[in-house]
Figure 1 (cartoon, rainbow, N blue to C red):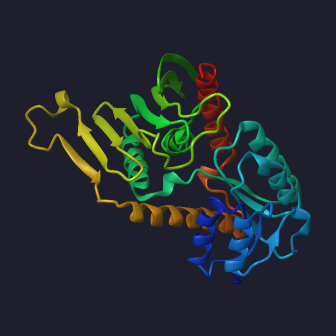
Figure 2 (cartoon, one colour):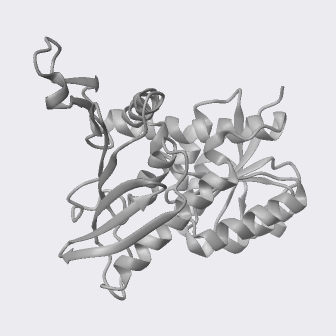
Figure 3 (spheres, one colour):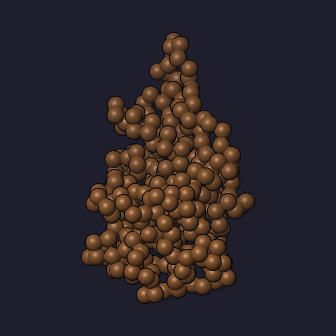
Length: 320
């Protein structure tokens, strides 16, 4: 089977997608770059030896899928790509309205529209999700406790949705506000949830870029069960299981153990993030060829993630 021809839209974070594509030549090849024509985008296209397109209308006819990493200004381009029957993998975050419109366009043209939550397929997060789902086979979670930045909130919610039956109904309210954190509490589905969100955005200013030194955390997720608490300590791990003290009295088993504790350097993490993008591309290619939709790209999943992200953002932005 011929490799899928992939268009990368945007050359900032888009270069992470290019690295992923170049690492799997049997699966996919870079067909071109869609960008406004900045010096950087011209240079990237030149180095990659592919065409630089400035509008969707200029595209060649042999593009199979597009990786859209253009931010909010790229919303119209995404819809035009879908209208042409090109499958789109879109970088997060995305608003519920944008997702609904894109899904409608995709349905009309027979294309697929996926949102790349990205972090859920990193090694530590994958271990966390797998172990949490094992625990859920015997009992539902008792509580959720999340520490995030406004930038990492969407990805954290995507991880949580992969271990939750549903986010609906969700009832959330702003409970406290102390710079730089805001505390949002309520329920996700029937599970009590607390979010401590570091607000890095200020009035009239954009959210700082990924890796900005102003961020105090990436994210930390703890899910409590009657038998103990499972914690994803950070984007790089570790994943720790703490047994419930009262249920462990007299037992010889350790009170805590590491589910995933492999030391991770920044170089390791970069490679994992490239691989995560490749995994998302592979998933979309599989859907395009076999017409199967994985649970994490089900419209209900991506809409529920976006709705809760928007709700928390609205609560926090009201106190910027």
